[in-house]
Length: 119
Image 1: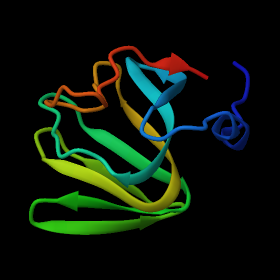
Image 2 (image 1 turned 45 degrees about the vertical axis):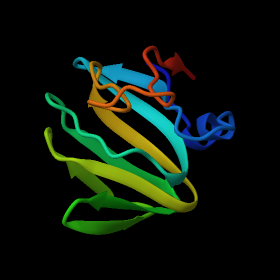
Image 3 (image 1 turned 60 degrees about the vertical axis):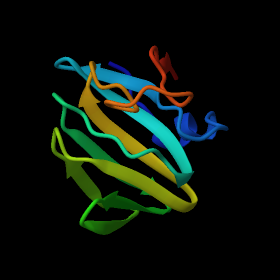
């Protein structure tokens, strides 16, 4: 039951699109990740995802629109909704999602991370 300093944890991340687990609760993972550039279009059959912008900004693209997010803002992507995060510059994001959530959802490729590291 120690506190978690998000800034300290994020300072240890030096790559993009590779989430790290910082906490667990009720079969959910709290993850930290840095984004830059576009990710892959994907969806999650069984999981909703929460994105909280810690620092910077990014755009969550959907097939019919895009939502711009800045520090202190969140978006929840419901299960089954195709989406693609895009960051023009590096952004720091906290993710809150079920433990079963695969970073690339229904897509399997070189960006898929089967087992996440803890930080």
